[in-house]
Length: 134
Image 1 (tube, rainbow, N blue to C red):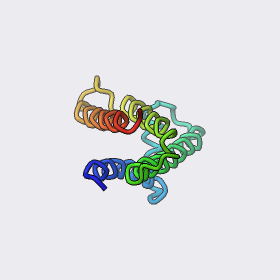
Image 2 (tube, rainbow, N blue to C red; image 1 turned 90 degrees about the vertical axis):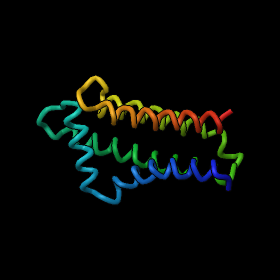
Image 3 (cartoon, one colour; image 1 turned 180 degrees about the vertical axis):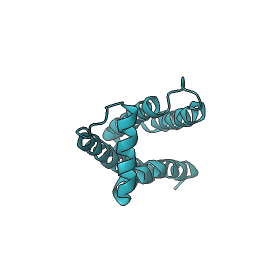
Image 4 (tube, rainbow, N blue to C red; image 1 turned 30 degrees about the horizontal axis):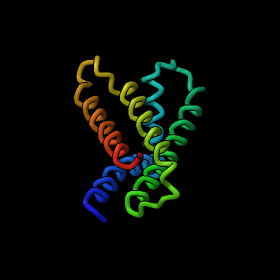
């Protein structure tokens, strides 16, 4: 295992933990649903909460599976996994863009540091993708 493989595994461990967090801590899922509900300004009704909860669960599952897939490929260089790598990276890119625009709009006061943090995470994904996908 090379230092770059360790770096990739460490990088995607962040996303793996973030995905697992929704399953390990139910109160965190409720917080995520409430926060997303508030950000989308869906009003006082809770009829959207089950949809938002399902969306967060689905995203969390994909985040876990794709993080594991990228870490596994980083370690083993398994050729059967390579055709799917592009889709995994596209998922993370779309996820980061959507999350950043919803939660950390740079045009709002005091959102620049979280915005730049997510921008650097997005840049890391693009850089890793450029080295793994031909």
